[in-house]
Image (cartoon, rainbow, N blue to C red; front, side, top):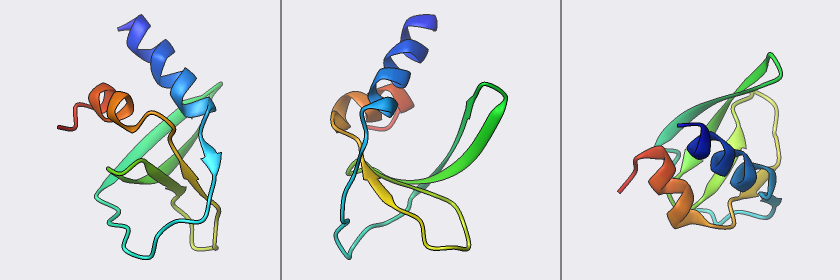
Length: 75
């Protein structure tokens, strides 16, 4: 479990801001908490994440999508 959290953190920190494609399907909501601060993120299984907000927010791409999905239990 601790290994999985460490691996998640490494993949999460490495995400990069990018312009997303128009056909994203925000299938999942991820609650990510770090140092007592948490946010809810929208997630598309192609590796795209965006913070859930009324305001327009940047979209990020996870670099290792297959690994990230495996950690989340998404096949």
